[in-house]
Amino acid sequence: MQKVMSKTHAVKASEVVRSWKVVDADGETLGRLATRIAVLLRGKHKPTFTPHLDAGDPVIVLNAGKIRVTGAKLKDKVYVRHSGYPGGLRTETLEKLLARRPEEVLRRAVRGMLPRNRIGESMSRRLHVYAGSTHPHAAQRPEALAKESAK
Image (cartoon, rainbow, N blue to C red):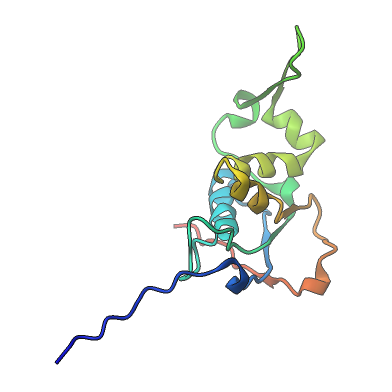
């Protein structure tokens, strides 16, 4: 009697099923929320996860202006960029960036957890961050994700 071996099914890009998710960032810790979002964008929460495909779900983040950080990160964490010109170094603290563009803080945190290639770029395009509690994606019928319980 021969043993029947089943082959592992490799998901193709045409077989990927996406479902929109909504995450409320109100009172959530920046890093912990960013890891949850990165997992959803990569598709690691699905049993059909494939590392070489962008199989993740689009994520809508609301209330990005109400995230919190622990410790003295508001004053100590510094975002640095350079224009490429002499004297073009620009620095900004987390506190100032949160006041000016709260969406950008979360976007940068999540982007740092995604792959640094074309797949990571397409994943980051599926991240929609809003400072307020409304979003224009009602037509996609996003499903709300429950908040992580504090342990």
